[in-house]
Amino acid sequence: MHLDELATWIAHASESGAVPVLTGRNGDMDTIGSAIALASSNPNLMACGLHIGKLAKRLCSEMNAPFRKLAKEPSWPAKIGGIIIVDAASESQTGVEIPEGVPICVIDHHDTCDWSFGEKDLEVRNDARATTQIVFQYLKEQAPASLTDEVRKLLLAGLITDTGRFKHADKSSLECASEILDGAEFEYQEFVEHIQTEEINSSERGAILKALSRCQSTECGVWNLVHTHAGIHEGKVAGILIQTGAEVALVSRFRDGETRLTARAPRSSTINGVHLGQMMQTLSETLGGEGGGHDGAAGWTGKSDRVAAESAFINLLAQTRRNQK
Ligand SMILES: [Mn+2]
Image (cartoon, rainbow, N blue to C red):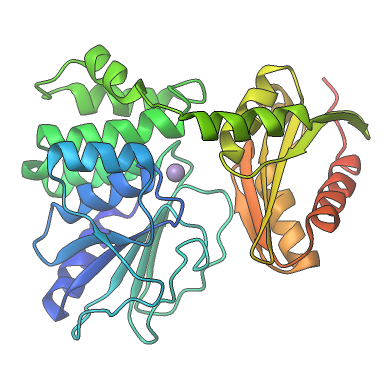
């Protein structure tokens, strides 16, 4: 990891002006937690983004953590030294247009990357299970005084949610969680219970149940695919489908002329050859739009209608070979 380079980049950028730390537009705990935690290390950094998710919003308001919500066409500070983008594999995943000519630094853990980098830009990307892992490493090495209980909680919450409460963790993400807790003055179990109390209201529950009632299970080449379409909570619906034993779950959503595909696969499928992030990236090459992600969790967004996008995904899956054991 080039964390010295990151420190140098930040020092340089913050000398030349304000440095927005921009989050992904899904506003999940990993992107928001990464942005706020990183911004705490330097007064010229400011966490901001288009949207803040439910859990992130709750934690931020409890801890009084500074996060600025942006308009679709943000009015950036007059003097920007650079923009840091956390946990977003492309510009469109931020939902805002990055001003021209400003150096960018992308800190991310997705397998795919649609950013293009110039000379003054920096990419810090690895296969961490959450972006907050990379930010923790950075703070530990370069700005340990920033690691307050609040910052540790934000980082840990990002790690817990991005790993599905450590179901998709690996050695280094578990080590990172343990390091975050080493020196923290709060208890892990109590904190987990605290962030778990996510309430789903009755209209959201209705939308999830409706999506489940429309599910279709198909044999797609050598893979069992369960797919449906949903109005909201596609990720949650896809997660439930995986729990029913689906080898691949696909949930689509069409809104305002735009289709969004959300896919999930368990480890047993990714070990055997499924890479959803690469499939979504291929879709963006054939259908346009933007797609990418991890092997077991990925998405695509574009202008195709829902059925055309689903069919394209199904075709790709049908062509995916199963590795021999
Ligand atoms: Mn993430």
